[in-house]
Length: 66
Length: 422
Image (cartoon, one colour):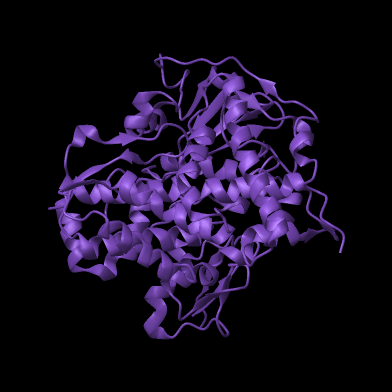
């Protein structure tokens, strides 16, 4: 599983990096950014879904790959 | 280096330029909230949620002839659609009143970037974003925490304190004075500026102009003080900032100072006050948060959802039929994030406060390009204010529920909140 942020939608609310700082961080203007390659360790899948569900702009996508 | 002359004659030049339009001031009891709503009447201030819930079921977009005409969407999806649609809905004015600023003011507006439309909005906002990131505002946290403790120290042996007047209001005032580099002892004046701008909506025009002028005069004096003695703060930053290869227009500098000074005060004050009001009347939630401090960030988001302090406004650009409403150019939209946040189509148990609500896609800080610039600062202030209060005063209750009063207008929160603390 991977997360990615749609930068067209992100407005810098910061819910993702508030909730899951192991997967998300902020850039110099407060917009969310995915840390590393966005791969979600199995133990963090629930948190990743929480970040998706709490983004006010629906800017986070979850890619469920094989 | 030549002296900065942008502000030399600024005070006089404010009177020039295009004028706006005024509408008739209509006050008094509302006949039907669907056709005659007013967010300035006491019934709305005391408890707007039943009104919003009723409108959401039967309208869902209410109309009023007051303020020269306006609309009130109450569903989350309508509020969101308008927030995203900057083509149809302009931010040229964001406080619904009996005065519409001249159309020529767009796309900058009177207090950029909150009053700005694209494409100017993006550039004006970009100047400010770095100062308001989570990381940047975290630098204010130690001083904020110490200040919260000092406010509680000052309660001394009192049994009853006013959590709005003696606690909540002082916190954002101190923080923003520090960030702007204004004297902390001017704090009491800031409260008056906020009331003049946000609550004096239905005052006679001359009175309103005089009150707004006081604020501008104060800010211009602060700009001159910073020109004489530049320092490491947001005021000097704005004076020196450049856009499109030039320093900012003086009206941009002062307009942004209006925004930065005013927008963060009654909003955070309201959020802290409403949260303490909820905990004072809900012992189970209070006891749980005292026992589980780690739940506070989650509970705080729920307070922001259920008691969202901020409603914004927009102006309709051109006549348009929008989701069944015949909107006319220059009609107001009262963009109620509080109503959106209680829409049962968007939230389970929308009318209840569920302090461990894990999924909470609320819109307390707006949606789209105008997401509250200070949201990270507001969250830091709210979290710190509640942490310190709960640590110092774990047991408290409403001293007199009938003595609690709420602000009128677009920012809603307790203005008198007597709490029994021992």
